[in-house]
View (spheres, rainbow, N blue to C red):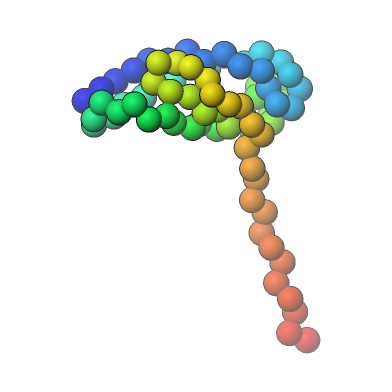
Amino acid sequence: MLSLLLSLRFGCTGCGDPIEATLQCESAADQDGGAAVKIACPGCRTRNQVIFTPDGTIHGVTRARTYERIPEMSLN
């Protein structure tokens, strides 16, 4: 089993403040693929989606989508 401890540094998509997050990643196989994680900003609480690879390279930071319920039409 592969286990990594990564430290990611990026800017918040909401307020622009710097964020540092430490992640522990585990995988059953040695893979070259990337991963995505959602991290909330401690200042403005905006959820950021960070796309990264196991070597610690950040490939993208976007605002995480929030899904809201769609109202149903009334049958009246």
